[in-house]
Image 1 (cartoon, rainbow, N blue to C red):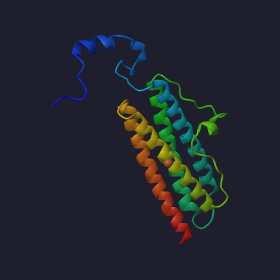
Image 2: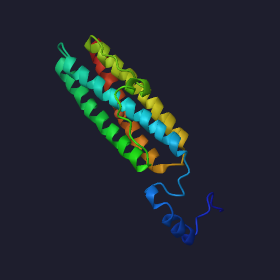
Image 3: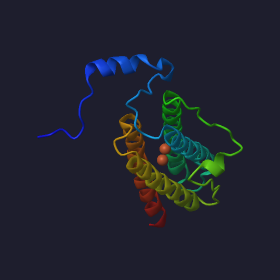
Image 4: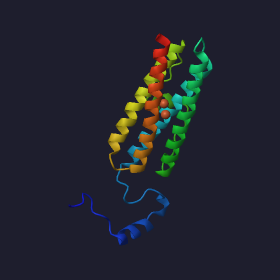
Length: 179
Ligand SMILES: [Fe+2]
Ligand SMILES: [Fe+2]
């Protein structure tokens, strides 16, 4: 069997590692388009921050007979979205970029929208829409990366799995509202 990718000789690995130490974790073997990856990660970061804010608002505004339980779920999601934002920001820095936390351009850069929502049902629906946007955009990014940046891919897959859980929970809540 011929290997699909030849292994780099140890001497080459050693000499490459000594060059450009200032690039830290970004080595000669990094084959993805770094500036494009940084742009995508910053868009994902903006999306997560908008989700943190939307869920936070909905947590405080949840009213009615299901208000407390659904509101608690919104808060839990908000905290998890903040965790995603932090993971993305850390990866951006590891790749030699800068995480963009600027509030001015946040909603333009975000894939998901900030919709305040009036009723509890509307809030659940809007959050579900946002989760479904996040799911498709993370899946897109994972497919774009292929095997060019395994660490970023693993991170995005971890986040994607949680967004799928969120969407599933919201779909259950929405069904509970209609029954
Ligand atoms: Fe998230
Ligand atoms: Fe989510």
